[in-house]
Image 1 (cartoon, helix red, strand yellow):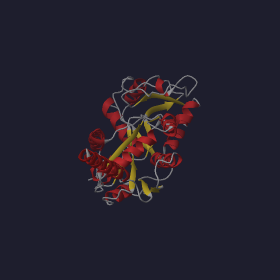
Image 2 (tube, helix red, strand yellow):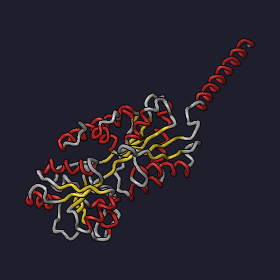
Image 3 (cartoon, one colour):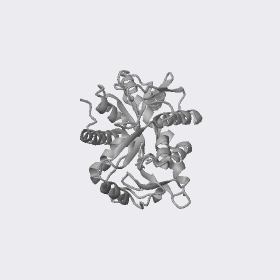
Length: 336
């Protein structure tokens, strides 16, 4: 009997020791031990900056992280300054960077020694949409109507406005030209707001602005949305104009223009971080995406809410890089 009691005591001690070990492992799960620097490889006020500051605000509001997050803009060299900073911070888990498609375009166009594989992919947060816009006074009812008119006018007769040179808007314009046999004069502006104003003033014939950059003019009846460059329509059904929601805009493929283009909104870490450190941020950003604040931002900006992590994200990055390489090569945008 005494032997049996002794065995039971030993078993209980073993179980207790095991539970203590599990508790110790749980408490030892990695989390930041100092403020986290969130690098924006672009200037203040743009899409990347807005998203980084939104994520920072959500984390503070919902107390998702014990340490603070500091947004730092490093825009030099079309974002190269920010990317090279993260590349050089090997093993530092207290740095993140928010990325747009300049992740691909900057190294391809400038030759800066950087590639997305030089960092650790954490999460695709969303994809930014592009819409083909024309002035509301034009007679075009569909994207095909407009592009047929561009083709009939002849090469370099119609003006496409966009943000920056050799960046997403111009690369998308090259994609349209390649798919439809058209040829635009591309007019670069500093930002999407300027582009929308120029289109309202009829100084350009069309633009490929993001939804949020032209929504005010669309709502006011000054611009017409012809198609969205995505594989499916936007899911947002609330009316923006008196007659249309974002979901009423056909895809460009539906409208007879076989062109697709979306822009990455992603988060990366430096190379050489541990799995535990990486997984911490994957979970943190998952919590961010579940908040009402994030969902409201997604709807107001008419984003494609696709999110990815792990192998699926890396596969997407490889395909997107190749697409940008092909379009930029065709346009002569590659660094020599």
